[in-house]
Amino acid sequence: DASDIEKGTYPHYMLKEMDEQPTVIRKIIQAYEQGEDVTVDADILDALAEADRLYIIAAGTSYHAGLIGKQYFEKIAGIPVEVHISSEFGYNMPLLSKKPLFIFISQSGETADSRQVLVKIKELGYKSLTVTNVQGSTLSREADYTLLLHAGPEIAVASTKAYVAQIAVLAVAAYAVAKQTGVALDFDLKQELAIVANGIQTIIDSKDKMEQIAEDYLKIARNAFFIGRNMDFCVSLEGALKLKEISYIQAEGFAGGELKHGTIALIEEGTPVFALATQKDVALNIRGNVKEVVARGANACIIAMEGMEEEGDCLVLPPVHELLTPLVSVVPLQLISYYAALHRRCDVDKPRNLAKSVTVE
Ligand code: G6P
Image 1 (tube, protein in one colour):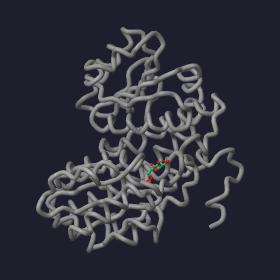
Image 2: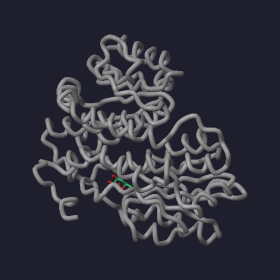
Image 3: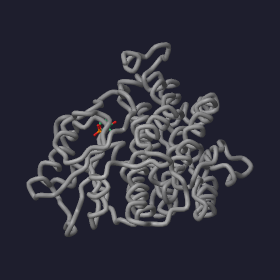
């Protein structure tokens, strides 16, 4: 469909692609639905169920999606997972389990760092699954199995809709293998994903707030920190990457509890700190971390899940299943980065020094 690769009335592909995220979640539900459930093909289910350990291999934003995927396979399906950066794994392979399954996550399916790992593990005789947005891409053709993202072409260099699609598809796979292996599940993923799609829409409809936050916190910032615990930590890494990529503000994602072991030394008067608070069991701890940085002069913006918000928080997220919070919490971070880049007159869709897909090692 030609409209997929045209900007239409949008000033930037990135804005269009962020706006498409609710539709992408709904497309994934449709693509993977079978009756009342969402699931993946039987041969993929068997490969996942037979593995004693999953090795997720990816780069950039896809690596960050892999960190969430690990939580899903471990917490929903009970399968141990390691997540590795492709360029490190290839030349420094860890000891492997007896029956590994390799999962390559790649929007483009063309990333050379990931492909060199695929070539190596095939030589060793191991099976592989590629999670990609591009049917017929190199990583898809060369792996044993493929799961498609159904996100439509992603043109902006900074990945947005592919990240949420990757997380949603990994959730479907983890949920399906859990069902297959008889794990008792207390939620209906198809229904929860539909709630997520609506939640993302709510955030997108209030973009003005994110524009204001970008203006208030980042207009003159030299650096910024993103903190969170548990899954919020994984999303913090992606929030920091988005901001770096398109606004060139130096940014770091940090585990809340780790701040005191070094990074807190960088907090000065006015340093922006974005804190995610979506995980109930660490809600008090992350609030504690915010107090620590505020006491040292930080300008803190707390993004909290509805029901966990407190007075003075800068943004409240629509409620979704606790495991699916990354799908909604990342969206304000994407939008804040986008507006920060605009305010600084950066080339949002084609940031300096970066390529959409890197086909050299
Ligand atoms: C490049 C892009 C990133 C992307 C990474 C991995 O560096 O600029 O946005 O996350 O490659 O790409 P892939 O297509 O493998 O997901």
